[in-house]
Length: 410
Image 1: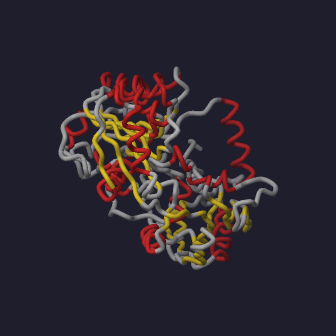
Image 2 (image 1 turned 90 degrees about the vertical axis):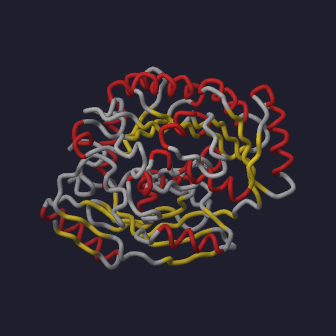
Image 3 (image 1 turned 120 degrees about the vertical axis):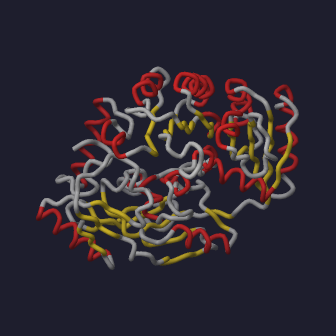
């Protein structure tokens, strides 16, 4: 396989133009930590952005950072942590789930995947924090979208398209992102022993309260039985746990936590986990460590399911019962992680048939090469939406040079 290792944006332009002339599709990678997500791509050429690894500008007082697309996430997060700042959308680290070294991945890969963690229900997703980008289209032309301030809405907001496009629209070379201060303190309330549907009601009540909840999740008891992963801070409990997180200034969080506890008293007495233990717990949920590639369920396909939160408990319970799989609920039931027993189609037919009735969608985040070649990894779109997607793709990359076939079969 030919690897084109670029040094700057001009190299990217030249590489893409050469690929267009030769009608040679390119696979776009940074560290390659997410290469196993998506449909297998038929290409023998790789465009390697790992040398575009500089942090161009970091202005903590202005709450913005500009960084090249190949910059390691681990380096950027460490720098931001030294200033007590963070990406509020809580970007997921897929390394544990996919069997890669922890912390692998680049900033460009984070934006291209657009996978946000538990705080998304409060802070929004990656696209909501992407202020600007420099990129190269499938024509080989450089373009710039957005800027370095929050209020930069002029013309089309192309940043929203690039986030979550999995490298199929352009090659990002540099991005500007909004950062926010870390909370002074955090508390997690723990309710034990609730079934999925009852937990769904408790989560809905918590997220609908006026107490500024920043994370709501439910972990069924089967997760502890199957994986032995007690999750940081839970004390090795073998019971199902429902978790509610509150973050903010020191004077506010304990008061709000007490108010939420009273509001949820009908569901049981809430225990409380604080600060470091709480943060470790939510990192485990964000990165789906119970389904780690090195764990007991490491050979099982893993689905990322988004559905209406009110339907989450019933849907997840029925899916686990019908397939014999395990589920974890995030986003108050709006995000379900499902590890399902191996099958030729990874249970895609059953899963998507059930999702049709509730208006949800599912993406296969982990699966064998054979499974990914046999099914639609990304949820099939309705005809009108699919037609719009093809027109957008054609506007950026008419010859399908960039990550051809990763999201939709070519």
